[in-house]
Image (cartoon, rainbow, N blue to C red; front, side):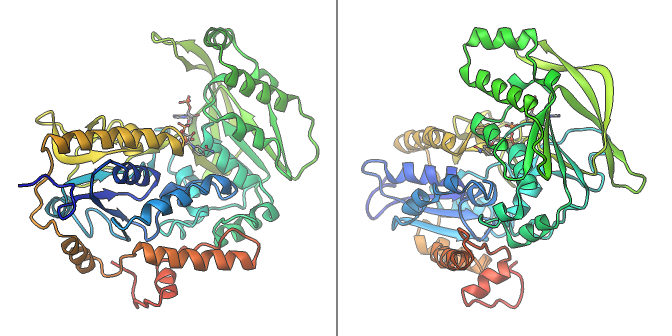
Length: 473
Ligand code: NAP
């Protein structure tokens, strides 16, 4: 049997997950010298781009311009997209094994980490990931509702997602109206009564996960003052010593920015954003009706672990924060895929450099690979996934050269197309997406926005002239 990868016998690859990592991997594959490759990319939602569409904040349009390079990849004649096709529902891993030489899972991290404290599931306590998906118009979250009638909200965690949520809660309707935030979210936020937003870091300012441009932006909001508590942004001896040892200028700048926030006088803006440090939620308090009535915090001190990292230790000193709305922004978490080995503790597919590993045999699973957040966990910015995808593609190429790949019984391109059309007649192609994109951008231009997003699958079908009469199964 001839090794796939040539004209007439292309290497057939399925990529599951149409986020940045899927595109970066496809790009690396298309660029392999002398390799003829056909790529089918699947996603459970109808539209491509993963978190670039459903995660990146609507007021960060510049970051979204990365999609132009994804469209270039998709324009390769060897590329096809199947949106609204879910692994485990419309197709199985066995289906993919029957149609492809290699399968690459790039499904990202689709849920949130838990805090593990009492009251976490009270009404009005939400994972930040849901709020993010909601304001970005993700079809699966458009009907979630958030009670924005409370004056005080807390966001647990001080990563960039927490900062995104804080900004969206604090921006004026006028600021939001120039973005591609979902229409229903714009309306809900227009009526929001939230006046005070707390961001809660369990460690000190030097350990905050957010990055400097994001913190700086918090100080530039049109109608929200930002502040911090002077004692909480003072550096403790351990943090100062660690920063000096590392000669870490970025962290120094971050601490300077936060200390400057603590000195800022209030300018009387309508909203206030309060950055807190060295506090951990220990309980979410019930208001007596099963909803959030407040949050109990414990003050922390930092200590140095055996490995030298600085971690929080509770002091036994408590404080109750009177908030009615809580967003838990303590990190995303990967979700297992049916039939794919998973490490539940870390929330990642079991793998070695991107080769999926069978836990029983402790050997790579032939023909199966992973990249991105579902490979290494939810860290890093969009671009971090480029070298990550390259590492996985290098393994794929090494395995191809060593004849380690699947022997599909149905390798023809048309066979996969037939299967998918049969399993999910309402699937969306890239051509469909390009048409939807045109409509979204046109509707946006009419109101001075980058686009007005489709957020219902039915509306997308209707815009394509494909009235299904029922929601696609
Ligand atoms: P993250 O950067 O990992 O931040 C998670 C935050 O939650 C940290 O402050 C962490 O504190 C805190 N935390 C974790 N467990 C906690 C607990 N039990 N109680 C209290 N606090 C807890 O995650 P993320 O904000 O979800 O962001 C994910 C990735 O996407 C990051 O790499 C981020 O930079 C990236 N991203 C980038 C942008 C951008 O570039 N603008 C926007 C959004 C996201 P500890 O540090 O103490 O663990």
